[in-house]
Amino acid sequence: MGLDFSVVPKFMDVILLGGLWTVAITVCAALLSFFGGIFFAVVALYAPAVIRLPMRAFEWVFMGTPLLLQLFLIYFGLVQVGIDLPAFVAGVIGLGLHFAVYNSELIQTAIVAVDKGQMEAARTLGLSRGQALRKVVVPQAVRDVIPPIGNNMIALLKDSALVSVIGVSELTLSAQLAIGRTYRPFEFYLVAAVVYYIINLGMEYVLRKIERRIALAR
Amino acid sequence: MNDKTPFLDIRHARKSYGSLEVIKDISLTVDRGEIVAIIGPSGSGKSTFLRAINDLDPLTGGEVWLEGTQVNKKLPHRQYEKHINQVRQDIGMVFQHFNLFPHLSVRGNITLAPKMLKGLSDADANKLAEEQLDRVGMLDRIDFMPSQLSGGQKQRVAIARALAMKPKVMLFDEATSALDPELVEEVNQVMKKLASEHMTMIIVTHEMGFAESVCDRVLFMDQGVVVEEGPPSVIFRNPESERTRNFLRKHLEGVRS
Image (tube, rainbow over all chains, first blue to last red; front, side, top):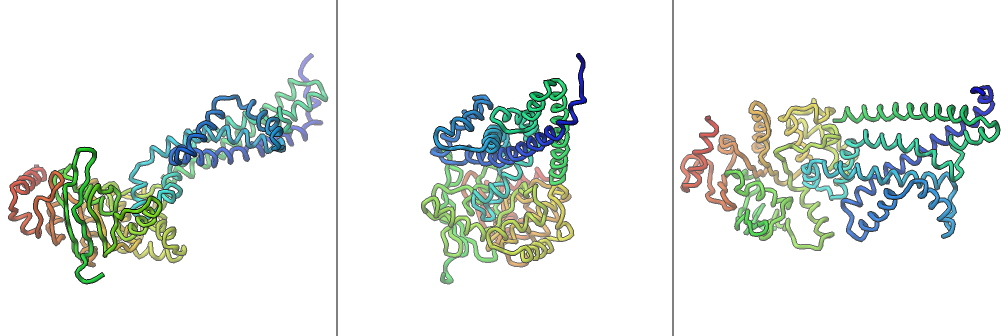
């Protein structure tokens, strides 16, 4: 029994819709992980211990446990305490916070690496520490870590397949749906893999554009 | 403020790191429009002293007053931050390594603080940037990024950035020490121009020739104390102290060799 792709066109709309959901969840989670990462980094470096220490415990949970388990906790677990999130939102929060913690590590290192003369120059002009961080230090730190953050975002795209288990009808779940109807796993998983790859190429293209724009500002 | 209140008044400044005293009871008053140079060997505490004036390196003892306002007032943290951010707007500072913001254009470097702190509109901030850049001869570079400028040009932009806050006094912390020799002169020219406009300036420098030609008064510092102070003609031509003489001799040898 060989491969038979003749059934694929009939389910292409399902697959492509799934692809769109994958793009949607990746973009939303990427934005959350980016701004969340900046927030966590600034908290980790500058907040008083009362805020910093609980935050660090929270980060350990996100770094030290499987993403799959985190998604289960957010989607199924939180219902028990009365927080009933739609699957898409739960997926975005799980993926976003998971990668925010990784981004935060990168951004913290970069903030510390910004020359301390930058903070001094800003403070000398009369900016508060918060203003100097926001306008001078953090923008430079973020600029320095855009390439490694980009790598994290590619990982995020791939890990977005995990949200299929909480019922977000993204690309992987859509492929499974088509397989359920046709009993053609090899074909549809291959098609899904190709679509993932295409999305990946698109993402890399956008990231390279961003990197080039940033390189000009050096 | 009456006429007897000094413009800038530093009283019994002290600073120590643990048991190491880097500034040992220095007092200094500066008149409006006066230009003071601070010279001395590295490690003498001159930069630390300069950086204490705007509280970048807080003193452990003593007081700094600017036009009747105490700069290093003892206040609860939050109030102090508010107070110092206000006072620092009046004290411009120029650093050895320029410290331009590399992610912002020349224009952005200059307009950032006036827009944030004085609420200037984009148009007003642009006009201000153009005026100040013109003053340092850098108007044609307004849309350049700092990385596209030479060291001397960067320092001139840094001076314009400080001037844009309309400071009452300018502090120069070895402003030309990191520059290639051929770029020193353009920065010196700008500082001379400010001197001719009667800007009050305190200049930490290794350039004795510049200090002699521009400054009204010279302080020679060594090991955390002011060893000798006076008009440049006396300090450079006829110093009283043995330590001053030794320093100047060594320094001249260093320059010649």
